[in-house]
Length: 308
Image (cartoon, rainbow, N blue to C red; front, top):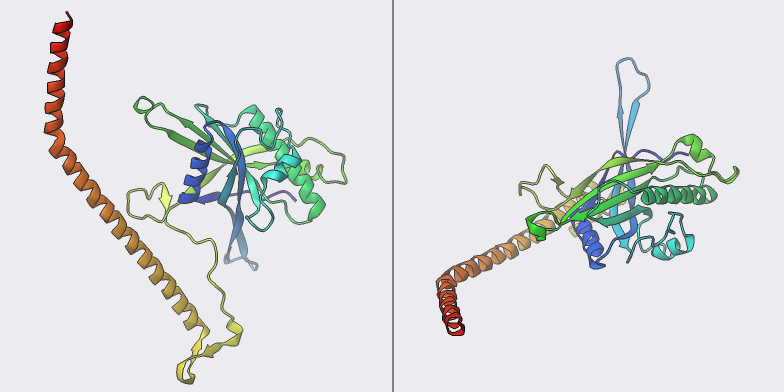
């Protein structure tokens, strides 16, 4: 079956920071693999004339991790064909990471659109995933994502490094995908790529970045409580209903999060105070520094006169 269309994708700020740090650590252009999950939100609504509910589905992707390789073509050859042995060696052992959802490519000082080799690599990886999925499963083929990251140092005379990134979904028509099933002769898939909105999720709120960032949205569910039991034993033989237990668990989690936030606020307040003291110290020592520079300039002038 043809993979569903991704409406939007999200990635947590620390995860994105670690990916960018890993890309810079190698000091060269490179690529890697993306890991995460897909979620489907369903909404049912009725119209006055409808006997059956109208179900709207919205598919979202969540990128949770990445493996960045040391160079480009880490699991492709020079023309973009998948090297299955190198691809398998780049994927962590099963169970240690969420499923692979796509790949990424990093380039420096280049346009933010896929190159011909990257497009060929996307097509080859898509075809490889479609054939492998058809052999092992009859369910719908998961989507495949491509994250393109570029950087440049055009601002502030090269002192500022700027990152730009764009997420794409690699897709194909149902007819093309059907021809890639094992019962058909192997063919080359003509894939297409379309942009997917990528939201960076941060814990911070109220810092003036609401337009670009959203607050923390938990991906994993709360610990489950067996509602079939109805209640559990409490003190003095009292029984606490399951919904009360759930509410207490939520309150405990909220209180723990509030304590963590308070600790972070206290830490950053201390950092700001230390920074302020250092700034005042620098300002106090500025006149002495100017005096030393003036004396140094005078000595250099006298040295020039002696040399002449």
